[in-house]
Amino acid sequence: MCRSIKTLRPPVLPEEATEDDIRAAALQFVRKVSGFRAPAAHNREVFERAVDEIADATARLLDGLEVRGAHPAAAGTREPRAVTA
Image 1 (cartoon, rainbow, N blue to C red):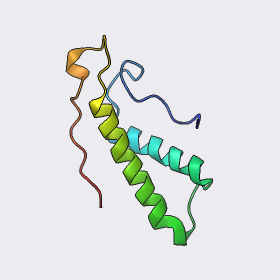
Image 2: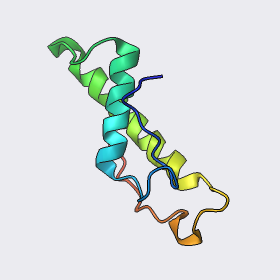
Image 3: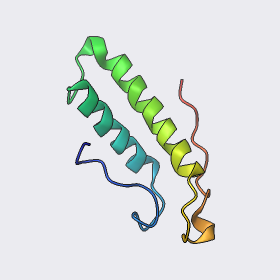
Image 4: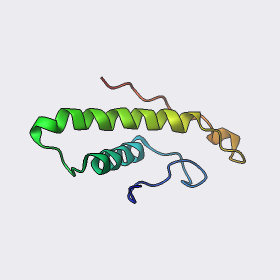
């Protein structure tokens, strides 16, 4: 596991994860899996698409998780992310 990726769900993260938090985790994941810190120009599109897709999937995961014992207002309160093409 990439050590730079932190847990984004409450109560581990005291407040709700922001889109920036989610995107940073997705970027770290794609960097780790691809082995590239920054893609070459010919790989930039696929690299960025992967980051977007992983960020979207992460937001859906966090929105759908039910954390037992967590404050009820914290569950499912995230604004839906705009779907990126």
